[in-house]
Amino acid sequence: MKPNKAHFKTREVHAGVTPDPVTGAILTPIYQSTTYVQESVDQYLEKGYSYSRSGNPTVAALEERVNSLEGGSGALCFATGMAATSCTMMALLNAGEHAVLSDVVYGGTHRLSTRVLSRFGVEYSFVDTSDPKNVRDAIKDNTRLIFTETPANPTLKLTDIAGVSEIAKKAGIPHVVDNTFLTPFYQRPLELGADISLHSTTKYMDGHNVTVGGAIIAADPAHVEAISFVRNCLGSNMSPMVAFYTLQGCKTMSTRLEAQSARALKIAQFLETHPMVERVAYPGLESFPQYELAKSQASGFGAMLWFEVKGGVKSGKKLMDTLELWSLAENLGSVESLVTHSVTMTHADMDPAERKKVGITDGLVRLSCGLEDADDLIADLDQALGQL
Image (cartoon, rainbow, N blue to C red; front, top):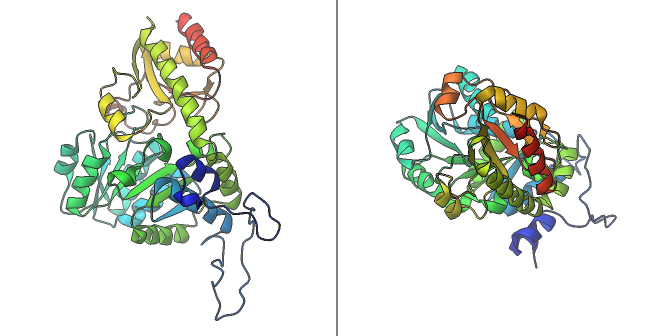
């Protein structure tokens, strides 16, 4: 059976990889080479590579794998998730054109839009994409991109991918979905009508706090070509060493995510009943406002959740400083459980009034559930909550 025709978990392990023809090595070699010798001028690029800024065999293996997992026409890997976002926006937008974005997106995406690309004449509207009607109403004559993030970082607000994609297609506008939180194991935007699925591979694809990287997978080869051109111009491609590590991390992504999601649900249920917790949000809880949408467009709920403690910011900070097993750190998706204060860390550059408007409150505590024993993680939360 060819890997690309197999089930998801088989493709995680085998897609993009064959034993090395020279040695039989089961792992793709790290082609740590700047340049590639050509047979002749007339045979230039016959073997596919000339210079590692433009393409590298180790990176190409990872690109083939993530493309297989998302079901695209092609994929590209980048030095970081923000490099993937930057190259995508620069490839699809020109000066004087307009983009519609989710009002809740990763802080780096918001910063790139409002403080970098806006300087070059690109216009942005941040709208509540949880209602597709808001997206339709925000489209202008010069709109050339719709960019959504679902679940959104950090509030976990969901966007109806199929609904927004239908609006985008009728308007002839590409729809990009940041799929980092759920991965292609739980959610595949291209199957729901989106044009491009984007990832920070740093998160669940790596899963071990080892690398930083990014990827895009596109339904249309023309989008791959356009974004590849910008990536080559900027030199923001992924390194072969990072690609090698990510190839190994991908193999266990679904297994890790299943276990981490089970822990997240158990922890969310604990927090929902704790007297010191003001509110908790996790898509797998029936109390989550978009629980039905979460069930309908994804096959799992993920391993991210957030909560607020009674007593506001002061109590929230004390809790995060008191936790022992949860690491206070700015990442997610790793086997280690992490706690993040979004206002201080991931969304610090966002205007406070704008943060409050979209639900990123000063007391929001974001949890990324790892692979530690759920009872130990709950016990640590309990002892920290008990000190408030």
